[in-house]
Image 1 (cartoon, rainbow, N blue to C red):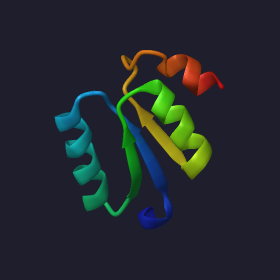
Image 2: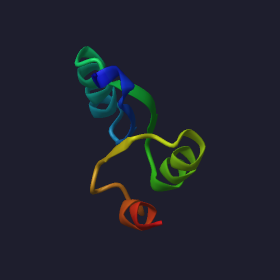
Image 3: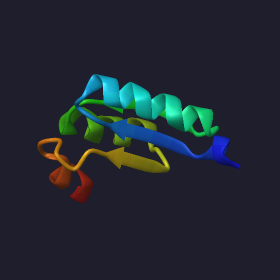
Image 4: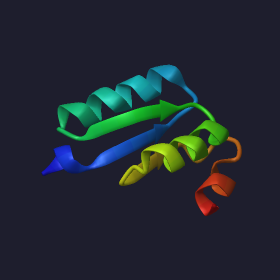
Length: 68
């Protein structure tokens, strides 16, 4: 069941981030939060422990965050 999958979205374009959130929620996924930079994303991953992180590969520092 999709509702049990907890997702953190990392996207620095606010319109795209909200569109992605709405799309995921329509499909019954649970979006925990949206981060617009790698530092916030890393902190949210530690705090929220999502099942999945959907990250824009152009967010600065994103690769380093994903590696940690």
